[in-house]
Image (cartoon, rainbow, N blue to C red; front, side, top):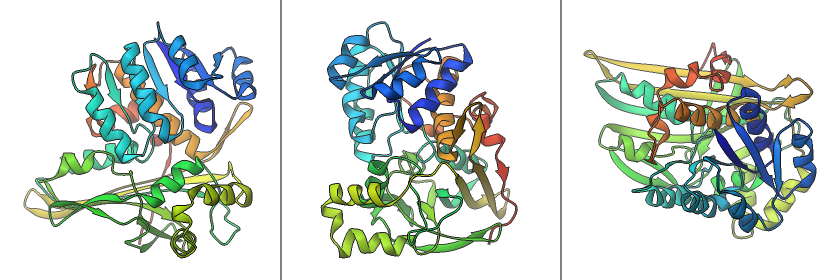
Length: 363
């Protein structure tokens, strides 16, 4: 299967190596960064330097069967439009709610598949939550918590850059979807602060945008309360609230991004925490089920792999692979919750989550 992969950044490089290494995909990677492409080309992966990103990609798309978009979230809509015009199946990692809604409209009546939000959150977290929810007769509460965290935090924010700064600020600044008392609502980002501990480590969690994917729409009318929160180390939320609201950098995001890029080092030594709880009635009893995993950074051949690379690339590669195997719709729009969790974890790419360490203690 011929795959056009847009983006050779932190996540894109991992996606390229996974798909190419499987032997079942002919991958061509598009990016403006010639240096990043040269590294992949040295491994036998086809590359295309996209000088004028949109036009040069558009010209090279004929003959490609699948587009995998690993570009920043604000390019999701133009990339999806190119895929539609070229007759390519489309997969991306966006967490942006507005972009996903427009892509869903775009997919109506399409002869190819459009499946955005194929990463960690949104993505895998929605697959897990929907799977657990299916076993209940009635649903009371679904809580989804995800954190991509430095394993060794040393600064006041207790955070290092592990993924896109653009995506990070986007989820901190936009309204968040939720269901409360059976009604779909919007809640403010950075609100809803809570604390919990896992394996003796203290965490906080608060509202951020995009992590629910399409679950609000899927579970509305079935669940009383549903929400998604990002996990950080205690104190992070208060400092981000100070920067965004009291210093008014929410209205000057370019400055905030520049500050974070200059002052906050990136790290490859990270950990991803996935924590889902579902409660409701099952066979006449009020029960709760929990799914909890920790995924750590590792080394593969000559490349250090961060936990966010492992989990995000595994999500989108598994989606493409399940589509190839006929386990997903072949046209129109596909939501993450249409993926069966057993199929995902049994997949050669999705098994990265199955190999993760199950969390022992939560309080």
